Image (cartoon, rainbow, N blue to C red):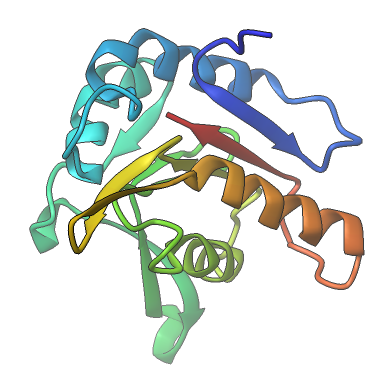
Length: 181
């Protein structure tokens, strides 16, 4: 069975995906020639965001412009003196209307534990209702003289399946959209 591009799953699996999820998946589908990790090699998360930018912005997202401090998107975690944000975490994009935070991982997303980090850090952000977690379908790399493939989308899907099936760890989101690009 052929699976349409991109791969995606919405969690919890007992809930139908909201409209914003379908719209976001369409943005990835339209960018496939530029970001499909089974074809395009060496594209970092900044390159993926650049390819998605116009589609994301058309759907109400504010997208990180660059890694320069002024262009990053910070969201509060803790407040301190006089109500000022004391601890902030950065996200790749945010859609304020539905309170969707978007994280794009490339390269060693699973092997470097970026997915775990994104789940925990985004869980702590004030007001985050939804997480859109975007990972490569395939990450190709060399280990010595051998070419290896990490199936990041499948690994992240297994991880989220375990979280939602076990009931031992409750994520504070209304939902998580996992996208494999």
